[in-house]
Amino acid sequence: MQAPSGEHRQHDQARAHPQPGAPADDAEPRDDRSDRSERNLGLSLTDLVCFAHVAEAGDTPVTAGDLATRAHVTTGAVTGILNRLERGGFVHRRPDPADRRRVHVTAVPAAAERVRAVFGPYHQLLTESLAGHSPDEIALIAGWLDRAVELTRRYVEESC
Image 1: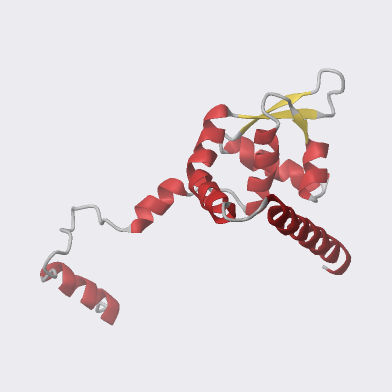
Image 2 (image 1 turned 90 degrees about the vertical axis):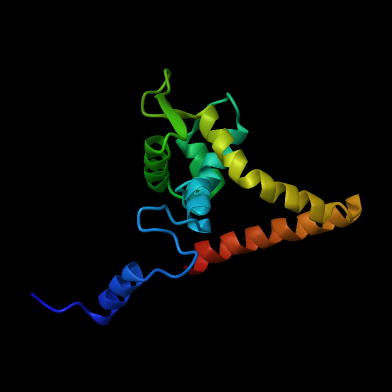
């Protein structure tokens, strides 16, 4: 049997002689990781973008092709995204009754609430940051952002 490494010896010593105020071994450590894990939705940015498009549609089903167009990904990529979203309980997928090759996607209401709970505070911060701007200034900012997104999309499509 090998002697414990320096790291293990330090851990063993810390267990034998805990620092004042340190949690007991059987106590659950209190740090912000548990708070972050509660907020973490387990979605990639692209998954989140696609879910946002589905959630914005409300009760109106969205097709995989619509999502591919709106998220600027291939239909093959959307299949993987929808698999993850469905596995995570974010969306329902149902075959199109008129064309069984197509699927209709709707958001699970409880999942939409979870996403709102995570991003609602961020939305509020954005709203507050724009509160001091005139409608013309907001239009200017929005126009610049739209152009920047389009420029980025084109650059990625052509260069990456």
